Length: 193
Image (cartoon, rainbow, N blue to C red; front, top):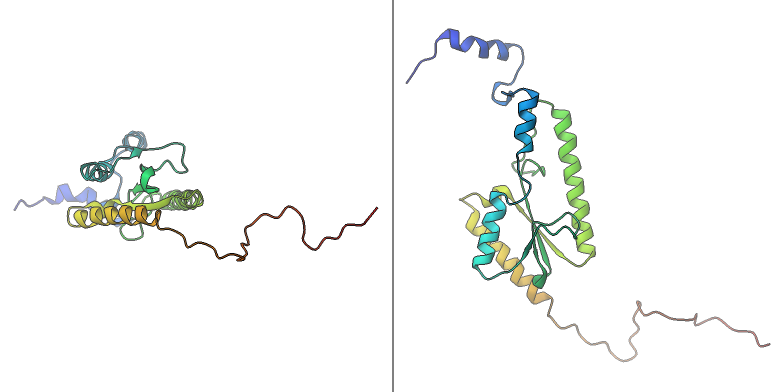
């Protein structure tokens, strides 16, 4: 095991003594950090590819990144009435393993909260349009839990597909429907001229 000399450790010790959190300290200047963050993809990420390849191999056909729907879902399965969002744990504020960086904490907290609110609003709009909404987190696609997650996605798709074709019981004669449109008021009396 290689030992570090005191000379090499002094800069780190100085930073730690001034209150900097060493493991989370930014190693790049603002310009470099901005360029690195700009290169992070929003489409065709590795978690998306894992789910898409699995669904395609199992015979499911889908559209990807449909801009006409709220939130531009990552995967849209029209036949099943389902949309799938594949969220990164950091960017969408996953409660289980998402974390807020130590530097510029206020900015990141606000940004991630805005993302969470936007996601919630988009999911509600999609449900109003009649879509079933599924969210898959990046951490659910790690090798240890990937197969279980993919099986659960497939189970949900099949279940939602079958639910769409369950016949509704017929209404009995004389049973009133509260959603029936009436052209005129029933209790209104007209005067004779």
